[in-house]
Image (cartoon, rainbow, N blue to C red; front, side, top):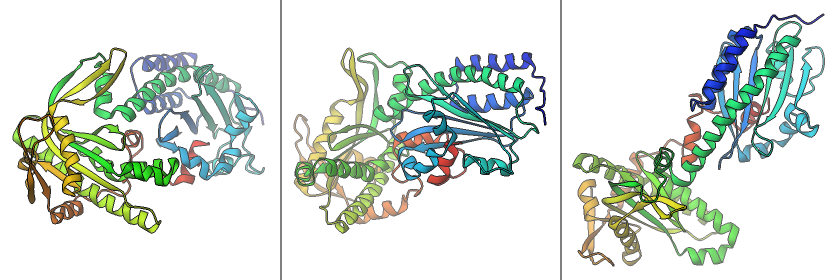
Length: 449
């Protein structure tokens, strides 16, 4: 049977190409670009049943971001995490994309015949959907770039793709690559700023706060936490085991403070500082203080669970100290003219750091200033008054009753599907559909189609 001759409209193809160029200059997301591109191809009359596009990403959690468009169903988005490919390497080794890589090819085309054995595992699924023709491609996003775009075009048209349609797809593939590269580079910058600075600070830098001294004075609830006896633990466990312990510690104790208005600004050695910006009025200060205290309850429960697991493994428990305070801070850039850090500074930061050190003196894991307790409310007991180094007035130091912490921990039970996710991962989840993500095998299957 001879291929069908499709009369592809050059005018409509030009409109798709023009839309891609305009979109590349409008700061649109990859999802918007892929969805708009596929729908416009279908509207132009190209006989596409399915389009899959995957983009490699420089991201601490993900290797790639994938989009699958199905005619009449829209786009499904999925992210491939670093560890997931290792769970099923055979799937990759038998994928069309591995065939392209190993043979140094730009394209591979295969007719799909239900009567013949499938050359690639994905063809079994495509046969069930009525596919007749398949083209996979690979497009680097720059001569020296490690990032690129891979994808596939699938049709269920009798006779498969005509030469006119193939020519149209190859032509528009280059325009898509340009628009995708702009979006990928923008997303890479956003990923890195979010990962290393935090979401709020990253947005501020992206919006133009890049000069030394740029920033503002804000009122915030401050959280300072630190690991206890970390030097002894590092010497006992060794380098790699200690790094794993440190990451487990941060997953357990820091995660609750990175939600519900809280932001982890800096990891300092084996500790961190977080803030809950709240404004200067009583009501927002009370709300921020209560959110911070709820996070303390969750953090203490998570640390108890972590230490119980370490005990089962025959490992030493991890001690910690958390301090809570309220005050005005400078939120902005300091450092060298060409090497800056974006964080919080000021007397309130020094005060919460001194308070955190008092958890060692009083042998309580959680302490707070009187200013924090006045906003937070609840059951607290006074430990004493302390003259903090470098601070004129004495500070009343308090600690929460264990029953109060237990109650707030039970009240603030986090969704298990989000438990332990980092800030960067929550950003990536914005690209996911509302459907629950598939399991590891399902993700890999989608990324290798």
